[in-house]
Length: 231
Image 1 (cartoon, rainbow, N blue to C red):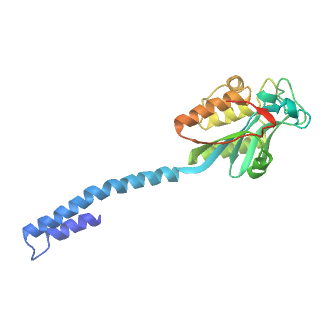
Image 2 (cartoon, rainbow, N blue to C red):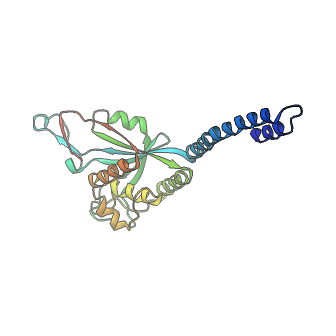
Image 3 (cartoon, rainbow, N blue to C red):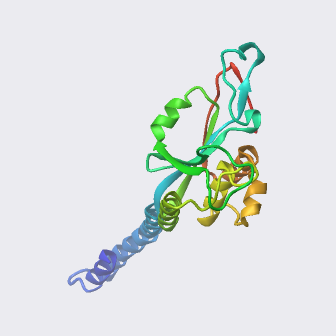
């Protein structure tokens, strides 16, 4: 708008020759031509930034087993090389689907042995400081962030499914939640179980998507006394 006022001021400026007015107008138009694209570009960038309200981290702990030399000092983990864990980190909290009070082979509708466990993310990182870890950093829009918060709140208050060996576990549950906010493909529950029966297939799929989307992936190598699974 200031440029428009300047144009009218130059046109109706008394006591100035037409040649001088022409030079002034020429400078104004040049300024508008070069400045406006940068202004609109900056405005568009600001709108993209403002639409991102949170950063979601998908936290992968790799499966492992003790190396033979350290079999007496390193403990065995559930699942071994096909084990590991997946959880979601948001607002400083680590939230993951886990078994509780035992393990069902097949899911039970009424007697669920499961929980969505919520812990401080810093505490989880400290516990895994010597473990092999990969973290996918995903920027969320406002609607995605709001939807995710609502899902996690509802799921923690009332479990949507049981934790079972042949059923929903940490990877399948994470896949199902992310599908609801448009980050991975929507599937029926059996589809999530088959696609993410254990963390590795789901992790590899999300890492490929991260590369395509340009999402940051941070990694941490595990201690050398254990054999860690590979991607």
